[in-house]
Image (tube, rainbow, N blue to C red; front, side):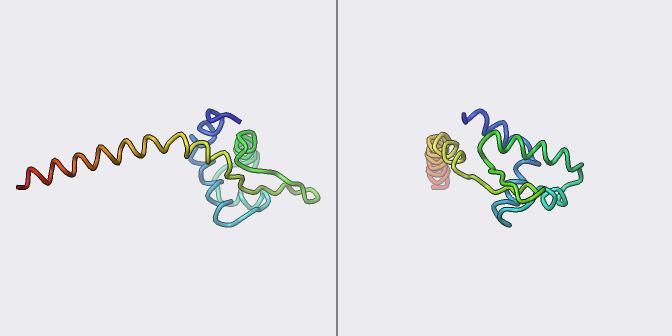
Length: 105
């Protein structure tokens, strides 16, 4: 998967909430996940498909149910991409902090 797929998947608040639920509550069936949303089960399933296509969730079948679990590895690529920007902003904020301290004197 590309970073673009992951960013696209993360763009939706509903999909971010699905990932949070899977992170905090572990693997669970689609029906249980759907209970957390004010949308139809097919809509939740479509969001899960986007997450699956981005590699952020894995799906296993247990009888007629589909269970989903978090696959966080694609987030590492995003973290690696964001790290230089985090350093950039830390340096900028540190410089601003130093400037403000000098103005107090």
